[in-house]
Image (cartoon, rainbow, N blue to C red):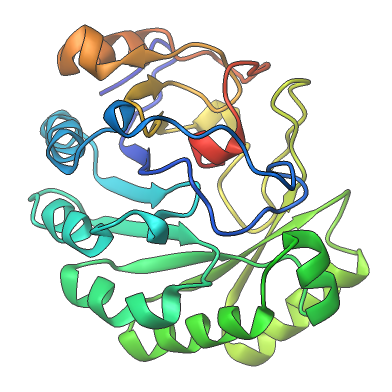
Length: 266
């Protein structure tokens, strides 16, 4: 699949839930957000159909996101169903790792290949301050469980205010070097103002080579994180939504005033 700028679209990011067990300051208010009614959330069967159609038309890489994907009941079964689709050569998940200790082995056995773990500091007090409720010890256990389960590579997503020279980011870099992890630094984004930048040590933010589509938990297929454009797979059908998303994928991101990071997956 190629868009109108001749970019090959082969990457699908799937938000399986808008719920999360943390309340990170840059993602949602302390009281949380109004979550989608259950009937609006795509079923596993619908998600698999979305992925299968995409793979049949050129999708090769799939990443499962949230909210926090590990709070979605039955997530291991969903991973197993997606992993069974022939043609996927990269199946990953982005998680805060709070629950990864109990899920890493079952996920790996189900076919998950690798994980990106959100971690902005290694200071326990700062971690609780940023997440408003998290215990960093849970993340450390999740990282070790992922390592033992053979999930490779393990990438650490660190959100920074301005640069990776900030104290928390520098500590994350050293931690990753010592632990054999890959550090990625993501400048704090703002959907409403269109503020984003290239991910340090990652692929995100390179608009000229963007190869991804995103689908929200309620089935809105989005051509870009920073756009209000979306095409619902339930109302338009798979072919219609995919064709519209690819055909209208913008040259570069602008603003997004219709989504939040909690329901689009960052």
